[in-house]
Image (cartoon, rainbow, N blue to C red; front, side):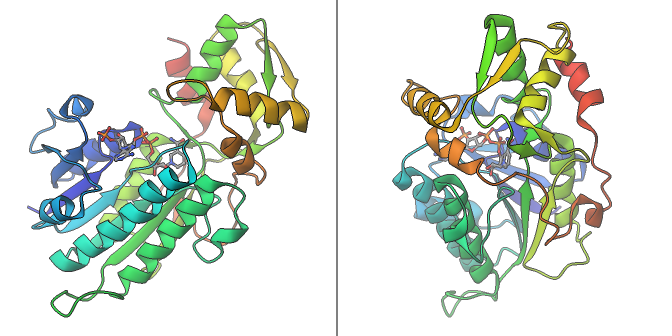
Length: 318
Ligand SMILES: NC(=O)c1ccc[n+]([C@@H]2O[C@H](COP(=O)([O-])OP(=O)(O)OC[C@H]3O[C@@H](n4cnc5c(N)ncnc54)[C@H](OP(=O)(O)O)[C@@H]3O)[C@@H](O)[C@H]2O)c1
């Protein structure tokens, strides 16, 4: 039985990836910062949860040993420059060294639409720049570059770049729906920014298909994961209202002008806990989050991406 280690396997996308991997017969290991975060996956047959600091390179290298493949889904949406570099750049560096040292043959790295490993400096936010730099690290390592003399040569690398992801546990349509039950109107930053939402099950299937060698593209391959429809943020807020039964198009959406959007994002970014929005999120939206056409999409893996409304209706309508 082939063994795989899934970093970030306890998260929104990771849970679906683990379910599919187990179904496909993989023996799965999921490292987590806290065992209690792994409730959704720990009972999956043959899955091992490992309490581990993935940023501790020695511990990570030991954990990776004996695995045939690795999936990385660890990411943060908000943070300082140092935090983004720690999670999106330094971790891929440690991961790459651990894979090279242990002869791991396949790596699937989930990045984000808008990242550009060739030109990180041209991306508009810290999130996207650090995602781009993380991709670049892995692309270089995939060829075996930087491997010690004892290391085996390189690994097969798939980089998946999803647009915003929807699904029953998403923190996107669910949040828009909830907000409209609480607020009399929605003052919205980035209202015209465009997205091409993709279903979480399609992203998880893409990970599994990459591991099964379904792509005709040579390694290192980049695959853009996007759905069939391009929608603005304002349309997405309105769809969340319609499908959750708020009535009509939901609350009045007031698109904020640039200065007010930045003020709102700054204030929200300072809120305690996980902020709903930050200045860096707003910067990410300077570039539409839609397919670039420069890389193959999910169809290259035999996946016909699902439309948002019929699926979102099922969970928002509950
Ligand atoms: N969700 C979206 O709409 C979306 C869109 C585009 C791209 N993506 C990408 O898809 C991937 C998966 O996203 P997701 O929504 O599933 O994320 P998620 O639900 O936030 O899960 C990420 C996982 O990473 C681990 N993690 C988070 N911060 C960490 C840190 N500082 N150090 C170590 N581990 C940490 C957590 O595991 P533990 O708590 O168990 O340690 C968590 O379960 C990410 O690469 C993300 O950038 C997501």
